[in-house]
Each structure stands twice: as C-alpha cells, then as structure tokens.
Length: 291
Image 1 (cartoon, helix red, strand yellow):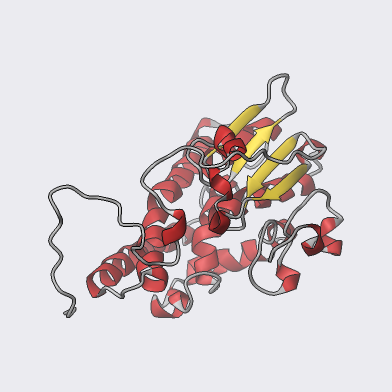
Image 2 (cartoon, one colour):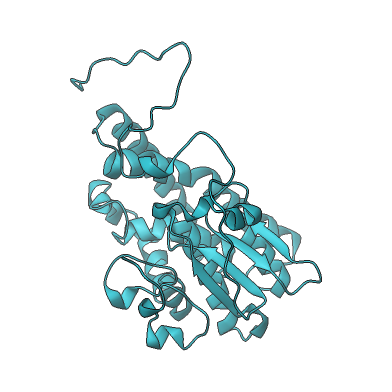
C-alpha cells in the first residue's frame, strides 16, 4: 500500500496552479483566449493547426493517405500549435476550436470557411469529403464509426489515466497506476480479440478507425509514449495487436504523417511545418524558431 497521507477533499475545490506535473502550466479550469494572436494561413484550402501528439497524428496521417490515393484537394498546410507555450489559448486558435485543444482544421475551399475541431470529427469530415477510408454501406460505416468512437471513449483512460500517472505525475500513486494499468490492458485485450477476427478493426479494409486507434495504442505499443510502458504492460503478449501495429507502421503515408508538427525525437523524425510534399525531403526545422 502507498505511504501517502490520505487526502480529504475540501468542501469547495479551488485551483492550485503550482500543483506539479509536466503539464501543470498549460492546464486550467477556464476556457477562452488569453492573448490576441492570429493564425497563419498558407496557400492550400485545408489549413491544419496541430502538434504531433496522438490526436494530431490522426489528421496528418489521414491527409497523407488521401494524397497517396491521388486526392489533390487534400493538400494542406500544417502549422504547429505549441501547447507547451500556450499557443492553443491564442484568439485565432480559439476561434477555430473553442475547446483550445489540438488538432483544429479550417477548410477554406467552401464559400464560407468551415471549422472542424475534435480529431474524430476531423477524420469523419475528411473521409466524407473525399469519399475514402469510411465505408458507404450501412454495416461497414456503423462498424467503422463504432471503433472510432470506442477510441474516443477509451483513450482518455490510456492517456490521461495510465499515461499521466505512470509517466508524468509528480508523485507515483500505486492505486492510480494499478487502476489504469488494469483498464489499459483490458482495452488491449478488446483490440486483440477483435484483430484475431479481422485484418483491420472494421473488417477487411483499412479505415479511419484504424488510424485513430493506431495513433494511441500503436504508438504506445511501439514504445513511442510513456517511457517503458510497453514493457510494463507486457504489450508483446497481444500478438494480433502487434501484427496490426506493424502493418500500419509500415505504410509510407503513416511514416510521413506521424512526423508532421513534431518537435521531439531525432531530427529526421521532425517536420515542424508542412506546406508541400517536398518538405519531407527538405525537413523544415529552419523555418521557425524552436528555442
């Protein structure tokens, strides 16, 4: 058992800003903009404002997959939103996403630009716009959206739950880590059982459900997030998940999309801004100041 003193919640909770943790400086209990800051706009109809977190990777991977299929209208400008520096609280970004979370998309191809926020909504919007990676038959669409929404409901237990308490919390709390490790392993078991039945989550075809789920569960399985979490959770045991993770990781569009707006890892794994496919060869770290 933990030797931490028992916590007694106060009658009324108040915000204690110096509460510790890696992301304490960017979390707050209020919404809205805190500074006036316009968003940059590039030459393509699709303007993406994001960062290469799992949620951000979903959209850049889908856009790269669409371009690989020949959808020229999927060309996009990807601008970094440095959440560690508070960019998500700028007035321009809040106008696109009032929730101040990445990613956010502005589609300027319409007479009146369309804003889309929340990663699942963006995936669905783009899949419908270009008619790809989302089945049109009722059964296939239902299965795809069911797994997409499964990810939306489940990943907070993996990220904000297990990931936070295992890797980021200033104090290791045995109860919290055990509770969320148990739930995370249950979720991997859900995936493993499904992937024993079909190549991809919705069936025989790769869809936006696979993209959404892979960006969380695939990245953790590959050791990309939360330190040695893959070893701690014994994720090698989920052999069907491992097969699926490797197959998706090998896709060229996934390899491109996962590094867009990325600021961590080896320089070869970082593309801070993306405005053209040639940026993957040039690497655009020199386009912005990251000091």
